[in-house]
Length: 147
Image (tube, rainbow, N blue to C red; front, top):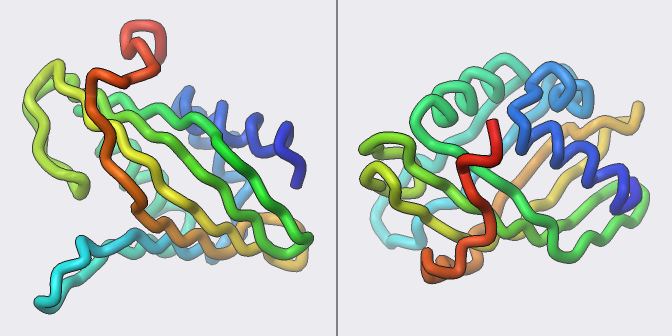
């Protein structure tokens, strides 16, 4: 997958075009999220299948506008690793896996995401690793300009 092809995929995500987005997924896709680095027992979120993915993000995007911006992109034919700068803008007071936000607040983070490909070239496994939280004043996106 080229950087340009990934940017098309990312644009579907940023515009909440779930039908187009999930065309990139194998039917049995698994999406694993990071834990919070605590020593105590945790239950990090794992999504199984396209339907679970769409339901999760439709629910999140009811209260939060989320935007992705691509940093680096490395592809070896079987795996894709990307650096994703992500912003969450609260449309109302909300609590979600990344924390609590009050209406109008933003959370800005960088994550590294690993994508494995199925034999037909679609994403079969996505693993998200958290790197850093940024000052919300550094935000890059205006939530009024996006769906």
